[in-house]
Length: 239
Image 1: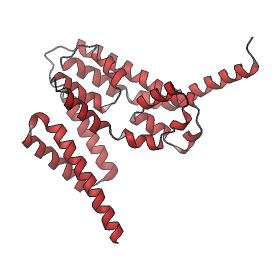
Image 2: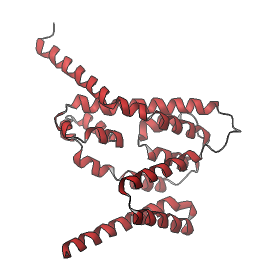
Image 3: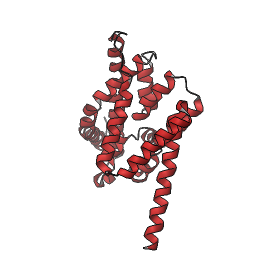
Image 4: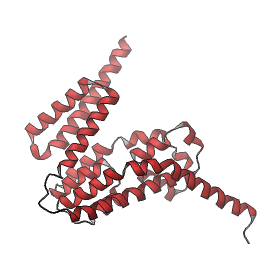
């Protein structure tokens, strides 16, 4: 028979996993439409249906998965895919600064937690209360969301295979997604100069090389943001 201490530890672990599920459940529900859209997009882009759950399980990077579908469908060079991934997901470096990784002990657990550090996981765990959360709760939040995402994407791929080929225009879902994300980002910052600079970078990049427009535009925009930050710091020091 197991000791009372072991039984208590298991009960605590179960309660922490349950608490993790209660925390992440709303995010799992909210991500259903996006996951279904990605699954449909994978099939409608000409890729095999099994690419959908593979991307959801292995890439697991939200907006980058939508971008990656287009890159794969266009057979983009590996270097372009790698640089695009770096630029799109570079924000995760800053997520790690406040993410409660110190609460996730064990090499394998930390490796998975680092891999599964999505926008949603960061938003749910980067709070003052999370500083005292257990490893079981943090990992369960990430794992439940990971499973929910893969399931939604797989179901979307199944639904996409049922859509007749005569139905066209679904590939515009990616453009629509990023337009909405851009609008939401503007609502948060409401910075007209940043929006103008982003649009200018996109136009210039399209004129320079339409095939590499995204890569060039993101590089130019990143340089512009860094320069703007340096200028603002210098002005604040003079003041």
